[in-house]
Image (spheres, rainbow, N blue to C red):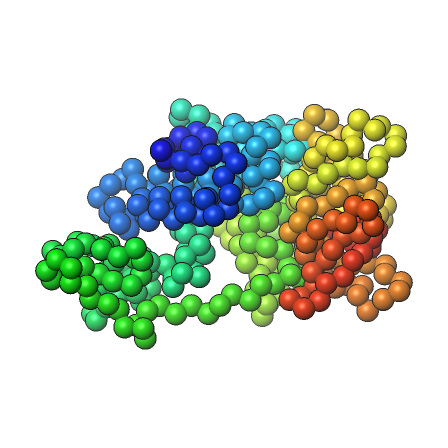
Length: 372
């Protein structure tokens, strides 16, 4: 049975630790609809449960985040930048963010652990972020079912609000919250005309930009130098302006920043082929920077006080990482392009990189960097 306010993410959703994506989606859908604030306007606890549910699903539905959670548990995840109150240090950052408070550049991490009470970890997610996750989840199912309640156009006629409202009839009555309303007598459903259902354009998947939710560090700002070293999270990419919209940790503000002013932080990177200290091989950490001059990654491991400087061949980047192509001699037209890692061919020593829906290439680690 699900316990939305439980410390453990799996128990929040009421699923087993080996739950499949299908099981996670089913559990999330049921709970998110049940505790959505617009369905429970007079229940102040519903919003908290809604945020906790979304925090759990946001982590467990992401392969890399789930792997990190399985390693460090809810207490460790409290130190992952997640929109809570900012604090310096971040000793619990999974896979190598620990001890960053005294690092050059003034790197800071945020955690809401100190303000939660009872050791729970969900209060760090804002209501807006929870709603964003909810809306994205339902985008392919006809749209946000509560959009009309917030003036999003889901209403009928003069703007009827909540589609779950009991109107004296059979209630919701249908397994789909988007298709019918119980109106009038028992068994009488009033179906929404096809043309009145909220239409959302199908999202075109991008492979050449960092994905929403990617953690970044701000760098190289001259007009607002005080923000350099601050962490944030990518919300979207503005094609027209050529800038990322980044939510700044601990502030609740959003900045439009050029790619050159962002350092991608890649969790779940695996150390391999290190000959000077073979005990490092197989361990996971976080790529916190790319040194263009030395052509090496800076990688943090949680158990080490300092970052490792590793050649690209010694770092296996996880699927979903945005990478820039460099120094390809056989096909120089690829240089400067960006793509998304799909997999790593260990036998061939190559990454499979998706450049577009129809173009995929295999490249050596030395021909890629995380400087997106």
